[in-house]
Image 1: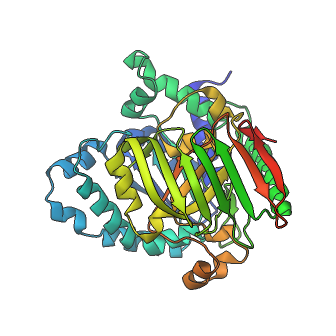
Image 2 (image 1 turned 90 degrees about the vertical axis):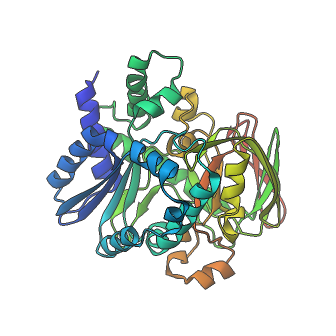
Length: 409
């Protein structure tokens, strides 16, 4: 059995070698909350040992963030962070890799006036659009991992003694990312190979539509001509492999923007903008959300859907079996990085250009003509369950089982 120190070393190694896959002479940009300093310092060392030229650390602080939302003037949230956007765009154009360590309290902005949150997300999204486009096209290597902050651990394990909560979340993270194994890099290579086999099978079928049925869900999604099923293991514009998020259990593609019709219900809470949205249902016609309800977070959901024109359309279709490690753990993480790997999910907002044949070489106009949704946002929400069935519809209208009772058929 590995010690905590050995598991933490493995975790940092995975972030550097499998996540962003740092190359000699490359710059690494590391974004993290100050609570994750212990892990950040370890990653910095691993990155330099791998040959990084520079590791630039950008720290945030939950207290500082919340204080701004509580006390700053409203006009503060209408000013785009151009300085930050320009720096990221410059670093990305020069080949930097981006690693984000997620540890935020899911309830951080609970009670904050919704307009402040939506104003900030909109202005920041507009400023970051060129950088996000490079990321969405896999021009750069980017990855996300998690660190168990006390506030997040308390949300995940509310019934455990406070002094045990962080340790419990560490144990769950180490298991989910395979850092508790003797050779985690080899374990990840095998796992990604299995996901690739799923992609190959789906790409060979070239389904025209997917039909989802489950309690509260009866949804048909058309897929664009030339769609590609992918997994999170990718290759950047310089031919270097990377893994966009650790952990990952999904295979995914893009839907046709105007091709979703029916109703879909969430099966797990969604952490969005420092608030929780839960038990919500979306009704779609010709791809657009035309009606919605949420038992928790109605205002936050309305804000998300109103972000821009594309926010009310889907940009991703992802398949995850119920019999996957994170799902079978029974843990609700309240962060998309983990919960999306326990459930089939959809994303509101932008589609990834690389999920379309020759998509990364297309202009925005060409992508739009092919039916790829465009937006300032991309928000995954979970809708899979043990009761979900999914059929693939072929060009001649034949329905073939893809999922039965929440698992691969």
